[in-house]
Image (cartoon, rainbow, N blue to C red; front, side, top):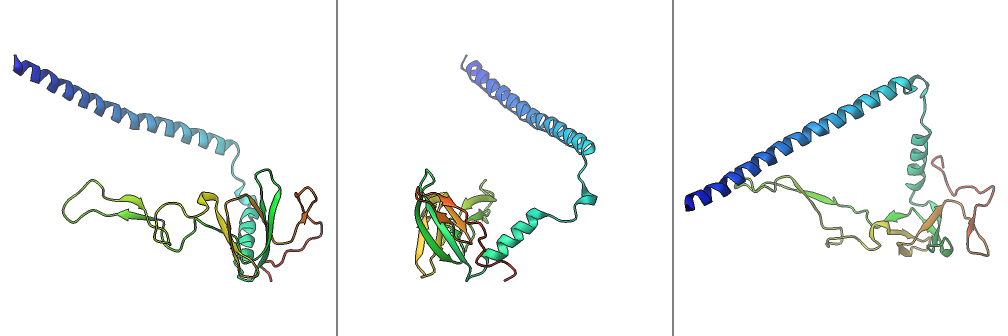
Length: 193
């Protein structure tokens, strides 16, 4: 009688394993079906409204990205940072040299790939893990994911996680502590000089 009791749980485990295998094999089929639908739909829309390749001789988005990169990659670039309260009022104003940087930027890699030990497969091969930050600690840097820092024209380091606006021409701070663009403003510098 004890033999029957041990056989029944063993059969239940085999049935569960087979059921688990069959459900995992259906998931890729379902994924393939949905992917095929997406691909067919994409092709149908592309045929109906083709990309205007012959007319695309320039990209304003790429030009904007290039100008921003070149303009803010000048170490002597003068810009203006307005730190705002959560309701959009100006809390502080800075004239800065260089650019605004993220506190999440760092000089070393942010992730490492954990390799396999030389003595067999531990099941952790190729696992991506967070690296320590430039300061030698783990976790988010000061200011969290929205933290920024910059240097004033006097060389003072300022760091904040408050909302901000950065411009390369000063804006007008209104009596109600909101900002206004000043018509006719000129940038402090452009990529052309």
